[in-house]
Length: 272
Image 1 (tube, rainbow, N blue to C red):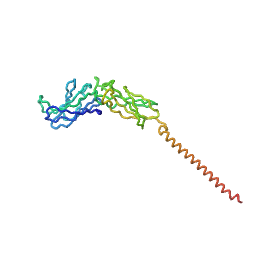
Image 2: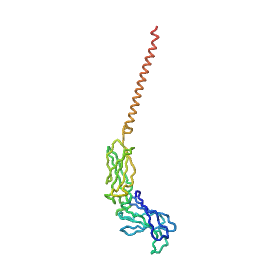
Image 3: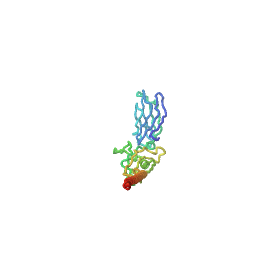
């Protein structure tokens, strides 16, 4: 799973009603949505979440929708869950008859939720140092005081971040890793740099890399030589030398013409 989605479906129970197909788990920063098909006609769906060590919990009871937010019943993020999508009618009263249902693939939030985009709070390029300060993405889960827990609060030492950076208008990327909220890297003080940040879980076998932050670029004051390059100055110098040479040649030609004209004007006087 690279985009937060798992796809699976197994059918069980009495096949008197259509059962869900294409069941997917879509999870980013522990916000988890269960989705499936088809749209029901003449019946409803009820979602049951089964944990390996926890009690079964029902969500989206008798829904006509084809998705269900199951975030609040997956609070034990290291638990492994399966979802049963029951196909039911509103008039069903026979509790002894098992309704038809489909079973999702197993899902463990801690191992499979996708890390969302980090938010860059501040960045500066002073001299040969690029400094970037960023913020952890928040999860839907809260502390007792009501504040939201970040992904760092849940992953703790398993979480790291990578900074990818490169000279503006260049394709050669460098990267560095941190477990804090900031980066400081050495750069060329005469060049602008672009960068983005990505959360990673190095211990994962899959889904190690999270979503990339927005690409941002620095803007430092640059001299004319840095802005346009030495090649432009060489061209300008060659043109300048050519202009000066042309001016000298023209001056010499004009001077010779003036001397020749003066000599011709004196010739009649010498013959008198």
